[in-house]
Length: 122
Image (tube, rainbow, N blue to C red; front, side):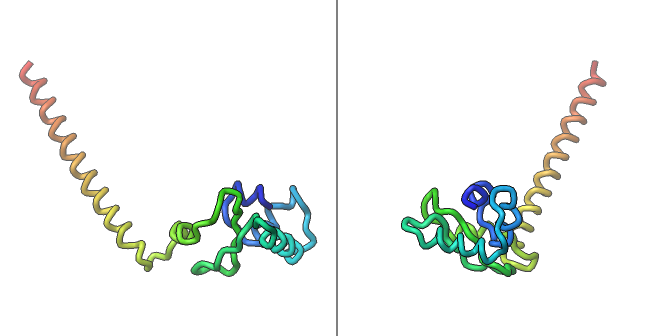
């Protein structure tokens, strides 16, 4: 389970159950949760249970092998819905990119026009 958490990041118990079949066969999710609880209660703890995020049905688990987990950073990386507060910055970025592309197209047209005029002089 630690290997999966290291490779794939925070995951739910169900995800760990499916992905760990080749490493360790668990009878059911409850057996896996028991092992997760043992690793969390150990001193020092090997894993931590993360709080349930928006639009998530289950809690996720993360390893503690690299130090404490920054829960706020993990939540900030979660995908957001179109109506969330992350949408306006995305719209602003897209508008800035569109303006940049339009500016580049204008510069290319000017360069091509200048090159064509230079060819006519020869």
